[in-house]
Image (cartoon, rainbow, N blue to C red; front, top):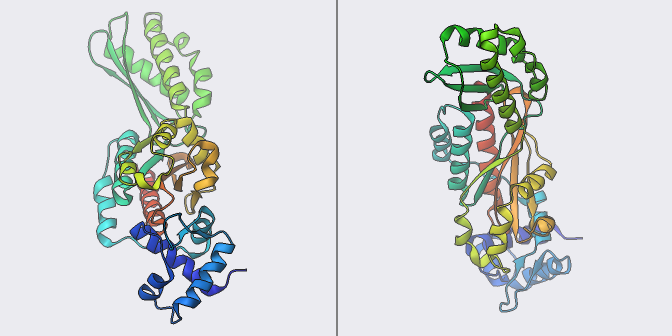
Length: 340
């Protein structure tokens, strides 16, 4: 059993090591923190922490550094999410602003989160499992050129430009637009292909070829939107912390290139639109990311869909600040998409 003071010593070691990247000794703790006890007493506390495998001595230093287990205890019981400054909160509102579509808002979000934390930022697209069609728009671009726009209630906007073999006229497009929206608006994406198959037969004979082209395009768009994916920014930040990756940076970069790996890891973290979670060091070993930590939270998109966003970096990261940034950005993103 670790004493209360020993836990406070662990907190001091984590914070000092994160700030300096230098192993922390008892003398440093006495000088920097108001424990009101001698260095010898602090050494006893550190010995207790070492016995519990919460800290360890590097080969070339008399100081101590946190272990993955130590970071886990710190995050679960000791770390308080530090409130963002008013300038940081203003930056979130200003940077995200009022983007035009989901791709733009998630692109801005991931860049902002990377800038706030100096880590790799990851944002998952909302799951399309519960997404519904909000509107289908058909835009004539030329005599035989057409843009098909699919809009979902999760703010996803998918555009495809297609060449048709028949001349386009506004009368046919108006009829087709009405029939397609009547057949698909409000449906779950997974139900759209079945609902659209009969659309060409509902049109005038001279519009059925065009109807078939539009239906085929929409079915392709639906299939593309049902695939899970994420957007990432700030991979260059890993180079600033290269010394923290004892096994080298290449394996980490290789692992984060695999979206399937990151999506699986995200999927196993217990988060929602309120809670923020961390997966630390060895807990990520099966994904080839045992030298990293991930802090993640959830955000709400339209239709009640929950997706994840977070940051990835070395285990020696500022958990309190990163947790606060993830939580704040997730909340603002939920609000923004709720208004979209």
